[in-house]
Image (cartoon, rainbow, N blue to C red):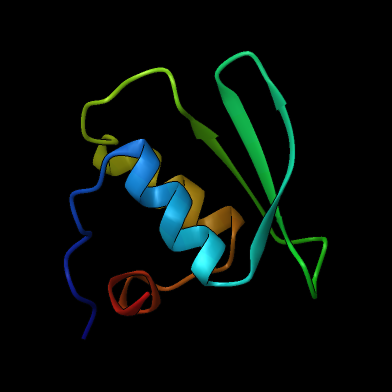
Length: 76
């Protein structure tokens, strides 16, 4: 059973991705690209321009490209 997606701001999402083994690769404007240190094919693009909550569809897409299950994100 899948848990519901957490409600996170962009800075919170960035911190959780760093705890899961991602490193900051580059940033262009407000878009931060993170790559997994062990598997460079896993990446995440986080838009840091807003202090609001990351929309659920955007968060789902980020988790899909980063190959992360919502359970892992909650535990990080």
